[in-house]
Every structure is written in structure tokens, then in C-alpha cells.
Length: 149
Image 1 (cartoon, rainbow, N blue to C red):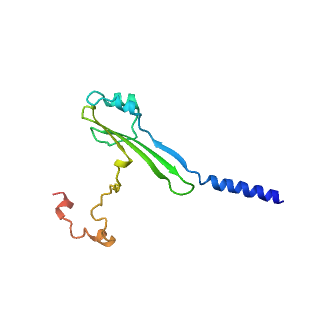
Image 2: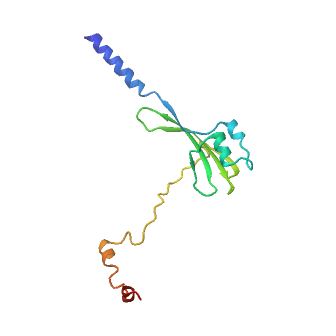
Image 3: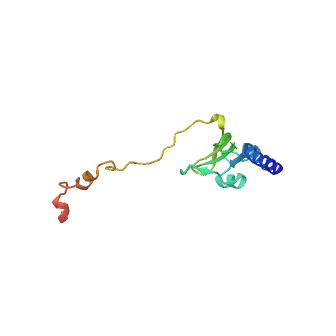
């Protein structure tokens, strides 16, 4: 009986300790330095960049869009929140003719905290009380609009 209890304690301890082992995970993709060095501003185009180093993580969505390649390394400790240990960002900017114009690289040390904007535009009258919205147009009607003049 005591041997069985000792085995259970050893197994439970091993499981508990294994949860404390840090785990590293990579998220995203940034090309190797050799691939980045092979890019030539003024010569390479969007299609040649896509062929050489693959699709970007995201783009900026403008006409002369930029490609963003983002990679993060996170360290997980048990059930606590992950901690970012490394960040690499490659920004490729193109001109209006889709020709590569600039190559920039950033790391976690270059970063700063940026407050996100929800891109929410408040509509006119949205914060007005319900009764004011319902009855606000009374008296604002013009008879000529009703008869089409």
C-alpha cells in the first residue's frame, strides 16, 4: 500500500514539475538574412519578391502597398501568460509601379507600445436619447418636399 502511494506521489510530482518547464514557440515568418540581402530596391517587383521570399504576413492596403513579414518568439511558463522574447519585422515598401523602393528591418528593441484605434466613427445622433431621436424630426418637415416641388 505504501509503495503504491509513493508511486502516485512521484507521478503527480513529475506532472506538476513538467508544467513549470518553459516552452518556446515561434509565430510568423521573416525570411533569412541571405534572402533579404538578395532583394534589390529599384529592380525587384512585387511579383519577384513574392516568388523569392513568399507571401507577407500582412500588407498596409494602400495602392503602393507595403509588405510586412512579422515573426515573434514567445516563452510560455506553465499557466501564466506568454512572454515575448524576440520580435523581427521586415517592411518592404513599393512605389506606384510595384517596384521595390525600400527595405527596413526592426526588432523588439526598436519597438514601442502603440495604442490600438478601434476605427469606430460615431454616427450623428447616436448618443442622443431615444425620445429625442424619435421626435426630433417633428416640425422639421417642409410641405414642398411632400408634394414634390
